[in-house]
Amino acid sequence: MTRKQSIAIALMCALAAILAALMLWRPAAGPAAVADAVADAAGHGSHADSHGHDDRHPEDAAAPDAGDERDIAMSAAQVAANGIAVDKAQPALLQERLHLPAQVRANAERSVALAAPAPGIVQSVPVSNGAAVRKGQALAVIASPVAAQWRADEGIAQQRLALARATHRREQTLWEQGISARQDLEAAAGALREAELAAQAARARLNALGIGAGAVAGTVTVRAPLDGVVIDKPAVAGQAVDETKPLFTVADLSQVWVEAAVPADSLAQVGAGMPARVSIAAQPKEREGVVAFVDPVLGEATRMATARIVLPNPGRLLRPGMLATVDLMGQAASVPVTVANEAIQTIHERKVVFVRTAGGFRAQDVTLGRADGKRSEIVAGLAAGTPYAAGGSFLLKADLGKRDAGHED
Image 1 (cartoon, rainbow, N blue to C red):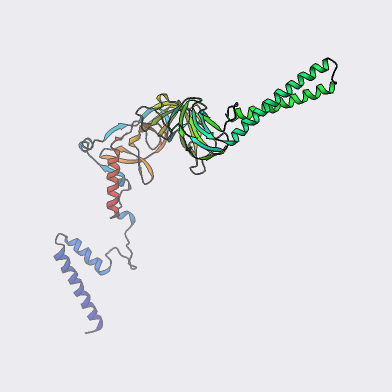
Image 2 (tube, rainbow, N blue to C red):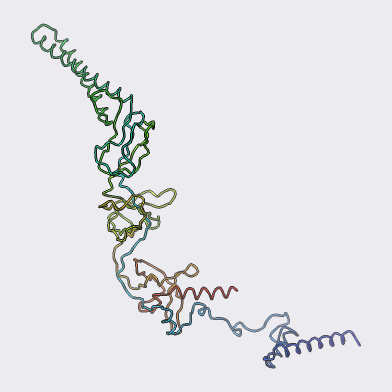
């Protein structure tokens, strides 16, 4: 037996073994399937060319429909059972709404930070943080030798002024009687003017610092400059203080600021006088106001600008530090195609709306425009009158997500 005959016999035995295995393991396969399997084992099938490549044309091979990947089969009964509400895309009057995080703050224009009028030691602090105070009420008593010296300086200046006035009157009388010279009268007048200026300066210093004149005393009282609430009180008895150390901050909380953070790409939509609706986390009722100020400078850390709404605060229910949200309301405009906001889903970073089809739903890419709190404008991807899943669209998105996960497996 030659070498070629041995190789041929070995190949025939191998083919017979493959045929027997297919007949035992795949009894449901027909003769054609078995023949194809044998042909594939022998030489990659009848469609393989001399190089081992499939010689079938692309159109002969079955290709999956790309659109099927976005279709969800669902009968009318299943739509109803899943609670999916179907509506039609339609025109609407939209008032664009910008939803922003915000915080309640004290009105800085009605807040005063108080420091010690003179260096000294805090003797007593009769008020606590959060206390309501009246204008002129004592907030702290400070022992200050410097204040005592200033009072003494003011008293000395007043005595010198009285002496200068008496001297001037005497020189005036002597000059009129021809007893003294004109230059003596002029010297007395100059001294009087200097004494008046010195007394005015000493009194002005005490008044500016809120230190009362009169008897020389070593204490000074810090008083509330307005009716309000003590919102900060670092002062404590025994503390050494001076003009640079704040002791209290008193704020009039009958009016507060609500400051919203505006992203840089939304600044073109925001301006002073714009209507605003403010929701406070701890308050059930919305409050209405207008934008009073938009900061022209972005925050270095946040890269956002501040939009400020001034709100009345009867009963002081709004407290600085409360979290809030602000909805800035743009101009109302008629829009030709809109859908409910809850109908819009994001799939692979694209906005989609599930359009009703004869067999269920299909995820349709859309381009969004303006939006308010309830509806969104569809700029492209959907025509007016098109039925879509207005409620429960998240169930359809979840269905597609499960399908994608299965394909990955």
